[in-house]
Length: 433
Image (cartoon, rainbow, N blue to C red):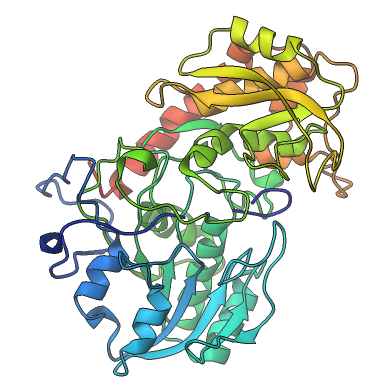
């Protein structure tokens, strides 16, 4: 996702023993101090959807259920959660709500699937992409939902739009007096927090509220954060009745590659966990006239333009950035920026995920690209906020510092305090220690 509001995905796994009764975490100000430590291994990870399904979806019985999901909402047997729910005739599933790219995932970045009747389940699928809380509330009322379920794999970055679909849905559910259930999934980037804080005046579909760029939380934890920190300041205030069905056996320091879970692309240009790892930083290149690799087999890992050359990779490798190398690369995008033209640039290769820092790496890449005469920031049709990079980074600060000749260390230093403050604020809402 990314070109305009866009992004998401993971699935299920684990032992049969892990799929006993669902483990629910009702919304609270903090996790219990005596809470059992989650499993630390790299196998046996059980997403919340699998725990709920193993319990026969008991948590949804007696409710009128609306489901927000996309292709990533699957169980360990590869069935979609909506298909599983619909097979339980005692459940009352009143509708499905598709985000960016659509419920079945057929739409490209900045697009959605129009309202349709799902041929498998017979359920109405409503187009919820870009819906604000008021429109979302109207869709929930139209469907007759008194409980809204969210099950989408996030990729852990502020400018991936699914978390803002969740936020608007939480506000909408609160205004309707409906409850909200999150079927939690691992954050493929793990717990690391990094990047600048969004300024409220730069709110958009790729960043609605002031959180940092790489938030290091699962969607369930983020929902708890939204409910505790943001919903009380939204509209008439107050919280939504929130339940989180936890992931079991997940180490929050583990990346997607270590969970043992299959990867379902959460959006068309997020084909692998490696893509998500790079995207946390290289998503910035959507705000430039360089190709971010859309139209190639490795989006967000290929970055380049017709005006770059071999010196770009040489300069980046000379920086000796931790956990990453840059291969001199050439590619021809089949769509999006520089379609049909040969681009010179780099293929980003993460050599050590534990040391790799996505946001500082991307800043270094921007600094070196800015040295080319033909480099330009992508302009946006927004008179008051004319640069797309400002929406992605959350303010004009990054762009202005790079234009003024600032280097990677100087640019990234300005948000260290913001990251520390965010880490302190998010702490009570974390479910996995």
